[in-house]
Image (cartoon, rainbow, N blue to C red):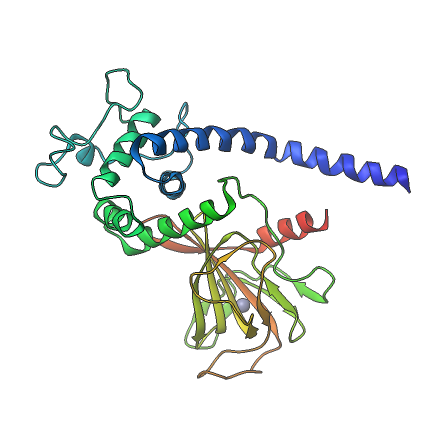
Length: 312
Ligand SMILES: [Zn+2]
């Protein structure tokens, strides 16, 4: 038995190494060092700088070669369009030299972070000030909300390295699912199936798969009682047809993988309270936002992966 035990330890360690978790640690250390340094010289709490960078990682994909952050300042904004920027802070545009090399470079992490931090500070350093600064920079409500929420998640867990995940149902429950993303659905006109159905009994607990913030909770005629959670990667996780919600869960709550958010049911396909029009199951959907568009993608391979991760 002992031998088997150490085999399992070895296997899971090997999985950790090969999955890049060690690398992820080093990467997040480098990111944190930059955020904290910029925070010290601009008074903007590090988690907001981190959340802006995290958001831009979904807009521009990952950081370019040789860079630690993915923030790409709009060149028009960078050189300063007259009248838009507080001129006392940025008489010649808003770019500033953050690393002391006497140059202001769009592709330099320290210059970009210092400039953004200084720009934000020109509005003040309270939560509301930061929200206004973000709105004037991005001019999009969902973007501002996502960055503010991501900052809260980073602050709560005191790290940007939040790679842990969970399967939405307890593994010991009786459940089954298969890949049905894109299948036709009849109710409410012609639609395609934007998610994976996990069939299980009424009342089986439903857990958050990820770190994030509850963005939506309530009734929808297709999804019934449903909860939407947006994670730090700007992915919206949609849990539908619930039988019940966890008693204390509400919009704005921070969740982590494994937090119980409700239970499996068969609600939906009608006015509030409609239930039992199909066998009980969790409908689980994933939607990516990139700052311009939102689109659905197939959760099935992720569910399989998280199920394996949870088993180990
Ligand atoms: Zn479904």
